[in-house]
Length: 341
Image (cartoon, rainbow, N blue to C red; front, side, top):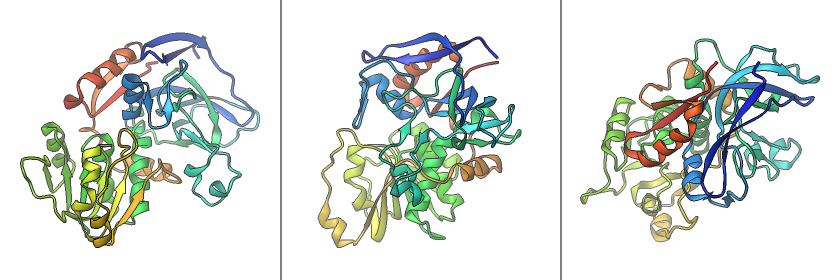
């Protein structure tokens, strides 16, 4: 075990710096995870570029990151679910376990949830992290740490399928072909969905969507007809313009899932179309009870990752990784930062 813990800090002036800290000691119910790989999430990039996302604002230096995999290297005195050496993926939302939502299985709605990397809570861009043993999940040796780091994003996609209750043979429209969109595309197919249409403004992402199973992929511009495209519409881009058109895209009696978070938090919607079509508008807030499924789908090949991971950086170059993700959106889908041995 290293004697120091490299930590990547983001401050309220959007500066990224690596600092050496002591390796933490796990609490009684915690395990100490040696982080192997981290994915850079779109939310991480928002905090880096804008200093905020939704109601979360960067006010003091904190450690970003919540898409992480690694190995357990120590266990607290009461932590007995796993042994040292177990390869795991981290679920970053630690709920209270006592409230109405936690006891009802919807712990993602817990008001006292502690979510790693939601400012000012430190996240996973470090060498070592202590976390409650109930929020790590074993991964097989056949699954690489890089691919396992996608489990958190895939969990969003699988939770979305559970929320909309995909029916066999339905047509799905995925708005946005970024990491969440491409995983939503594959999860839709894996859940029994039929024809899948992907919309994005970046040609390279449309090409990737086709490689990952999209039956059709095109840019929603140039006067193309967006009326009644699908039975279920997934907004994964966080686009205000796209969100305003979701009801138009849905067939009569369809469902619309809001997965992305539009900027400014408010969008003008066509309520008349919403009511005329008698649509269901479904919100997606992270995930609950899906990490084991995410690991299974990544491990058995239902989810392809080779087209999603587009750049790799070492931990020492993590600040450059963030800058790349911000400045090269048309060339980037998912950036992975590897901590090294």
